[in-house]
Amino acid sequence: MVNRHCRPVPKPGSRCKHEDASEGTTAHSKLFTEADLALGDIDPAVVEKGRITYDVKCQACHTLTDKRVVGPGWQGITTKRKPEWIMNMIVHTDAMLETDAEAQKMLEECLVRMPNQNLSHDEARQVLEFMRTL
Ligand code: HEC
Image (cartoon, rainbow, N blue to C red; front, side):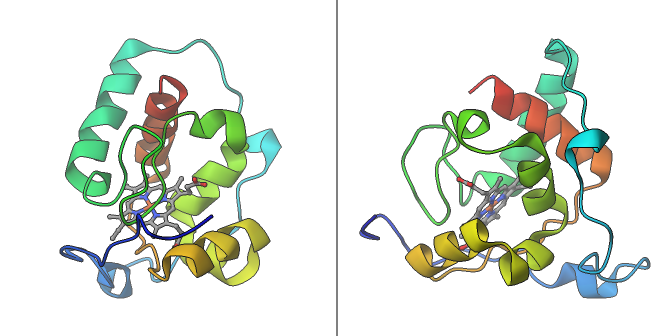
């Protein structure tokens, strides 16, 4: 992949916020495994919550098409990535960028490190449900 679609981060609003969070960095928490995630029917109410979180915290860097802006577009992401991988990328961003080969490959392509957006597990799960509709 060429990186001509990559652009500098427009405004890294919540960068490094996790350093102040009372529970500390999430980098050392346990990663999600397949057993943690049972995907059921898609619930429109949950999808809507995920969409709102996307609008507020993700859309500066991710489109809903296959177009890369700062990060990759999300169209079809749940057909390319396992649900637990997506959850880990959202909640344990730093651990993934430090240890996961696929995450590191993306980082090399765009040279921008995704900042941890401090989503709760519930919020991350809502975004995952939203992604299933893309
Ligand atoms: C400041 C820009 C930025 C923001 C804001 C951002 N991301 Fe990212 N995201 C990236 C970049 C860049 C990558 C590629 C990995 C890297 O370089 O760190 C990425 C990768 C991802 C991936 C993997 C994509 C793939 O194709 O495998 C997921 C999932 C993801 N982000 C979810 C989110 C969610 C959910 C939010 C909002 C809560 C969010 N991101 C907010 C920049 C951002």
